[in-house]
Length: 244
Image (cartoon, rainbow, N blue to C red; front, side, top):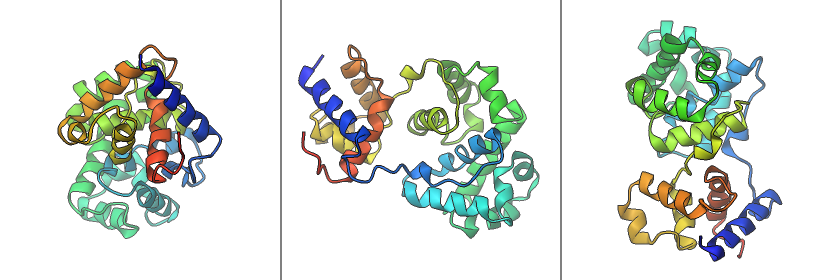
């Protein structure tokens, strides 16, 4: 175990908890009022499948506007989505720029909604079926039903989605410690800054490999990989203003 690295990670965790990494408002905190738990879980799931190479803050602002607009609110209802035709769904998802790609994003949204409805009827049923076990859910979404969950089944988005489900979706995940760190741009830059990887490795290594490097480094500590994600993300986003 790299004691210096672990010491720096603990400093970052402490700084994050004390609000010393500048504005640490998570993109997902831009949220509407929900009428029930299932509605909340759907809200934090469908837009996640569109969260690829785009500004997360803008995405969730668009999601909130779409949810609160009576004319577009139905895109967060599984029955409504699966019964609508594509042009109708496209009009609603693009109104507040929740969907930026008028074909690909609409197809992704529709397929994920149908994947949930056809296989589990609801997200709550999905979690209940697998007893809230992260490893069982991972097998279901990434292997058994992979084709029905485009992008959401990808390693980076899936792991982050599970983190969001446990943090905002009130899912009491078992085996949460197995959630991998999600190496997006900010996490990669922070990893380089901490000398976990080099710039060359960041450019050439797969995201899975980088996640495993983090898991190995934290193995003998008491820190779960996914709990490092937000401190690293905000540290990089602030331009590394906080000095270790």
